[in-house]
Image 1 (cartoon, rainbow, N blue to C red):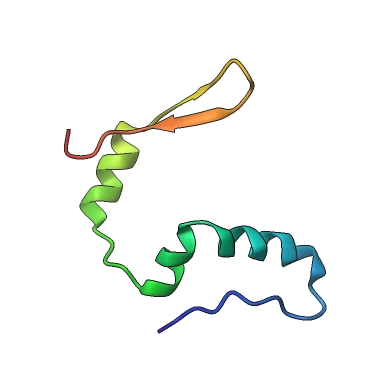
Image 2 (tube, rainbow, N blue to C red):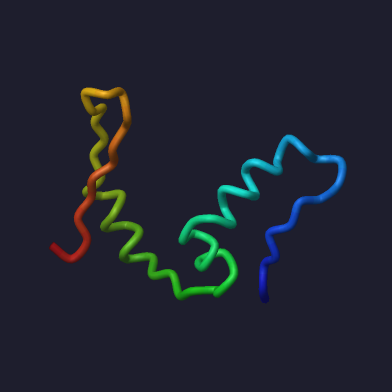
Length: 66
C-alpha cells in the first residue's frame, strides 16, 4: 500500500502540514511501508527523557540497543 500526500480541496488549513511532510525524511516512512519492531519502540520510550534547551526548544533523548 502506498500513501500519496496530496492537498485535497476544501482543507487549505492542512496544506502547510502536507508541505512539511513531503519535504522531510518522514515521507519515506509514510510511503515505503517499513518494518516496525515493537521491541525498539518499547526501548525508545522506556529510556526517553525530555528537556527544554536554553532557547526554549524541547529535546527528546533515548537509547536503543545501548
